[in-house]
Image 1 (cartoon, rainbow, N blue to C red):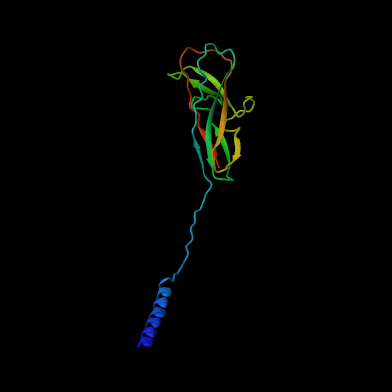
Image 2 (image 1 turned 90 degrees about the horizontal axis):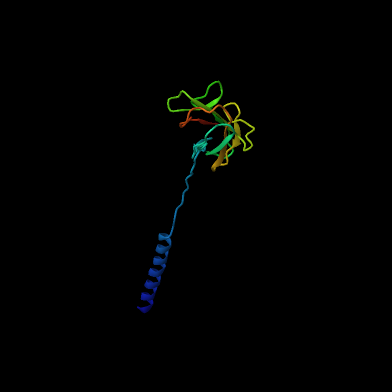
Length: 161
């Protein structure tokens, strides 16, 4: 009887191990992920160009402004600046509050203020996928000084890619 009981227990143990081995079985499958990156650009963080407070406009008054362009990596693009809302005949002008008096100014690509930056003289670059900061160099040249007051203009930045 002991031998029979031993045999039954051994058979039960083998059956339990086979059942445990079956319970540990797994199945796998896969799926794909996908995204399509398109050429894209954005302009952020433009700072105002403030020429400060001056008396007579008998010498150059210089100022700078910056903005950030972020384009997808390897995207070629150009940056144009318009001549502002108060431009006349291609000349950029800041206007007083009633729009009757003006102060002329110029925008440049370089700190030496030798290369104009406008809608025909553009800056070209290639996207890196991260922020690229650009500096605009402004100059109010000597000119007849208009009446005291605050003079402003709005310049539009255009990125073409």
